[in-house]
Amino acid sequence: IINAPRGHISDVGSENVVYENIYLRTRSTNSNFHRNTDAWGTAWSKNIILRNSEFTVGDDCTAISTGVTNLTVTNVKCVEGHGFSIGSLGRGTQPDYVKSVHFINNECHRCQNGIRIKTVPGGKGSIEDVRFQNVKLIAAENPIAITTHYWCEQNRNCNIDNSLSIKNVVIDNISGSTSNKDMPVLNIDCSKRGLCSGFSVTRINIQKNPKTKKNVCNYLVGSDKIPYCRQ
Image 1 (cartoon, rainbow, N blue to C red):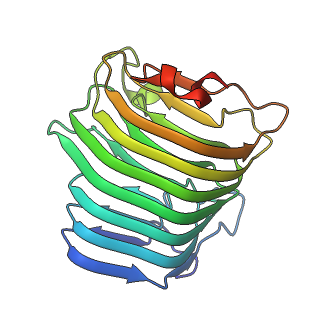
Image 2: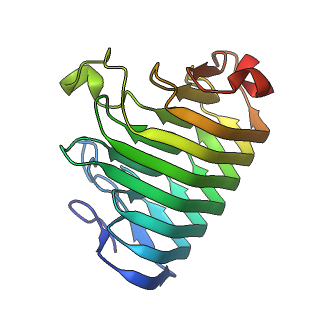
């Protein structure tokens, strides 16, 4: 698919499906940014595999929404988008949930975000058993970003202390480099009520630039045992 006007592929309510060998390339043909051109999104689906594909877009390379269980994304190359994202979740009145989502052996080149989980303040539900492993990030503006305060600057009260719980997250063997921006390599910004727990962060090898800020692990339960939180 070349130069789609909006999002490309949406998977809703599927079971036992494999997506593979997909090539997407959407760039703006004028000075306007090609926003809302998500590559591949899914909701209310289970036992899904996305593999062996390449996406050049202006928004999320993966947009994982509520009701997704047992998803594996492997050997996917993302270029210039917003990275491998779960969320945003928590905007509605009903609880959102995501469980057992694994990103293994992927790449993100010149992406705004590399790997990301995003929930909004006041949301309900849970995100559980997430794995980002063997991911290469080249010139990423915001390499590793996990927040329970997404969207609050425009539409929510950032001081709300509750959101979805995010637990049992593995971040392992993330390599590459930052862009020339000043964002931290590891940016985990959670709510005060201990909603982020059970995190394992190992083998982070991202080359920083002179402006890169110190890593952030706000209100992450167990952050004192994660050396990268102090770097």
